[in-house]
Length: 318
Image 1 (cartoon, rainbow, N blue to C red):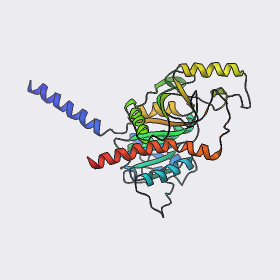
Image 2 (cartoon, rainbow, N blue to C red):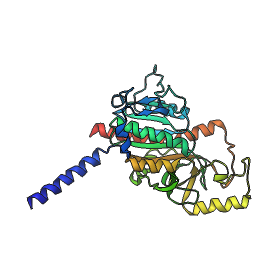
Image 3 (cartoon, rainbow, N blue to C red):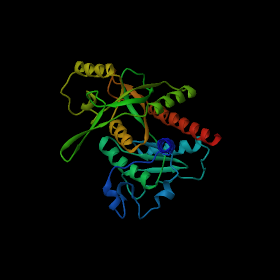
């Protein structure tokens, strides 16, 4: 009986420890045999850089398409957290390469991922390994970006409930050694609800929770009529988008499925927060002014910035 109770409390303590100290998981035994793990597209490595010293304090990671947007985010979050330095230029940590850009302030890391599934997939492999080598724990990651809405007013922010493919199915397919592997695209529901609550506290713009359709293409894959090639009609497009809407899809972009799948596999608490630039039921091309679109694309960073500040403040006070 004593032995059973001891085992029970050990299990409880272990579960409690893991719940408060979530490590970054990699599932690759071959990494153990590498003397130097070269993170080529970041221009970083385990032998050339002290990754724990550089990144060991990271608790929040925000990724987005363009280098400019991610530098803008780090400048914004520095201001929100009161860490800004008027003389700081926030150097690009990945300056040795032109593939991605990376910026850091305190416990917040900001990384660009390019456009589409292949580009963000490469970045995430190296980011997950970086966080693992740096021995980071309890990391929360956000993808912020832009998207096309379905039945939503432009400027609406969508927090993704689940990423679905172009057939409205919640899965990501990866071909490995000639075989198709299907991976889950669930995102953290608790984190999504916390973000919705943050939006209510801000009360600055409409925020919706819904499914996000992730496609392999910007034009035909998203039923646009304005690409170089198009073999379908306006009626075909409307039928497809209305079917997507019936399936709970609120917006369309090109990265969320692999982002959700890889974050889930690595134990990262993850959310996708995208603003809609237009309602795809009403058109395909962006006609809003640059100033309006710039205002829209600041909304995801405002929401995520509020979340980060709220949690860091709570941690400091507790």
